[in-house]
Image (cartoon, rainbow, N blue to C red; front, side, top):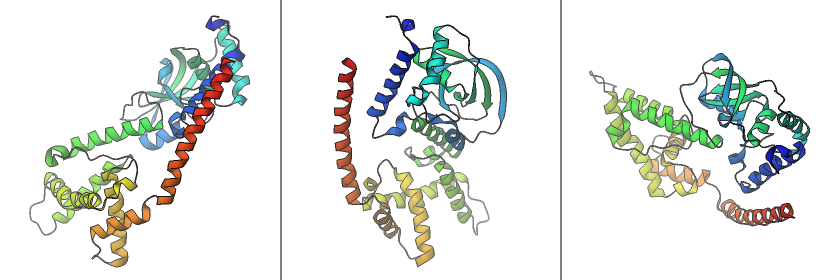
Length: 316
């Protein structure tokens, strides 16, 4: 049977099944298959202003999220719920009959598109393998350009990589320290580090007639502040207690914690004491880690069985 001989009912069932199996395969990591929320991206990129671009023909594969319907579709725009069936099938029927529908409305930011109006039309178009669609475009200005992401985690990684390149370029950090693995798991942390360096530079300038250069401050901060803290983290063996976090993540958290300890107990609190206490009070408790480990095993087994059962039903 040719693709275009299918009925809207069959098309929706096929698209809904794809969303279902996508959810099953990522049961333990549902965030990986969630459609990206425009508001979440705006909070990260902080666009400066809007520009109306008017009518354009845009590539479907660059439509990666939605302004308001991100809970209704997965990251491939397949429908996640049967309550979408009626509207979805009407749009699909129009496509089958070559009826021209109004253009969708989208926001463009960092080279990606997010649907303002027309989520069902995008879902049907993606399900049918359409490459381009008419859209009314409003652009949100951002200096960062993003490649096509699979999910929100991909966008976060791209933003972090951009922030790292900018920080290294503006401060000369890598050339000065020969340290190229100042990495973070969250956005906005390189600004924190830059402020730490400037604060360190301010104190270095106290009592000096000639101002300390930024290069000197970077080298001094790295050797006298950053390295002693991450060395203590390694020595106390606490990084493994914080899965998916980096040494630089630990530095930022521990500096804050160390400052709070010194405010409460005086400046005599050592960095090793701060690191040990932080690892003790903020780690995931052992019983929870054990429970999570066995829960993951059980869930993976259940998912494997359920997936097999569903494929058998479909084959029948």
